[in-house]
Image (cartoon, rainbow, N blue to C red; front, top):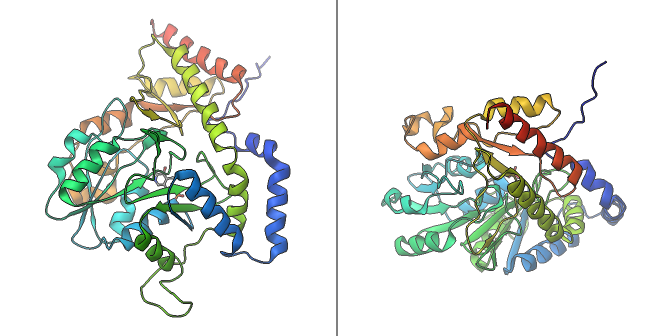
Length: 375
Ligand SMILES: *Cc1c(COP(=O)(O)O)cnc(C)c1O
C-alpha cells in the first residue's frame, strides 16, 4: 500500500486569506461600490497609513516593487553614464531598474554570515561615475545602514533602500526604508505584506522627491494633461490599497510569528552541519525567508521533496553571473561569497500560519537527512 505523504508548502497564501476573508470581502466591496478604482481616497488613506507605519512623511503607491525602485531612480535623475552599486545576491529587479534607465549596475560581494552587501568592500567600488547605492535588506534582515549612510554622505551618493522583503524590520529602532533618501516596498502576494496582485510603494522624507514620483507615476503630468516629464503609468490599484489596508493591521503580529518560527528552526537545527541565519545586533529581522546553507543543498532539497516538503532556492544565479550581464565582464569567482551562497542556500517552509506540527515534521526530516549522511 502506498503511504500517503503529507504535503508542506514553502508558503501557503490561502491559509492567511481564510483568517481575514470577511474583512477583505467588505473592503473590496466598498471599493467596487465607490466607483473610484484608480487613485482616490482608498489609495490616499493607505499611503498615509503606510507612511505613519514606517515613520516617514510621504508614501507614494505605484504598480509594483520594481516600479518603486525605477521611479525613484528616475526621479533622482539616474541615467546613462551613471553607476549604481548594489548586491549581486538579490532578486533581479534590484539591478534591472538601473539598466532600464541606461545606467550601469556595479556589484559588491556579500557578507557570508548575513547575505547582505559587505560594507567593508563598498568604498573600493566607488568611482567618479557612482551616483547611488541600492542596499537590499535581503530575506528580511536589515543591512548595515550606518556604514552605508556614512560612505554615501562622504561621496555624496543617494541611497535607495530595496526593502521589498523587509517591511516592518527595524535597524536601531528605525523601520527599514526610512533611513536612506527613499525606501521601496513590494506588495507581491508572497511578500510579508502581500496584496492579491501586484503593488508597490515608495517611502521618503524628501518632499521634492515625493512630488516628482507622484508626477512620474501619472505619465509625468501635473496638472492632468500638462506634461513636464516623460513618465509612467504606474499606480497602486484602489482594490489592492483596500486589501492592504486590512492587512497592515496584522503585519506586526505576522512578522512576530515568523520570528518565533524562525527561532524554533534555529534552536532545533543547531549542531547540524548547516549554516543557520545570523541576525546582527540592534536589528529586528522579519524573515521573509528562512535560509540555511549546506554543501549537500541539492540532495537535501530532493530528500525534502520525497517527504512532501517544498523548499526553494533564492537565488540560483547571482546577478553578476546572469547571461544578460555577461558584458559587464564579471568572471566566475569574481564575487566568491555570493557565488558560494547561490550554490549552498535553500529556504525552508516559513509563513505565519505554519503549524507547529508541520514545522516539527520539517525539522525531523532535515535531521533524518543528516543522520543518514552520518552526522
Ligand atoms: C520582490 C522584490 C522586488 C520586486 O518587487 P515586484 O513587486 O515583484 O516588482 C525587488 N527587489 C526585491 C529584493 C524583491 O524581493
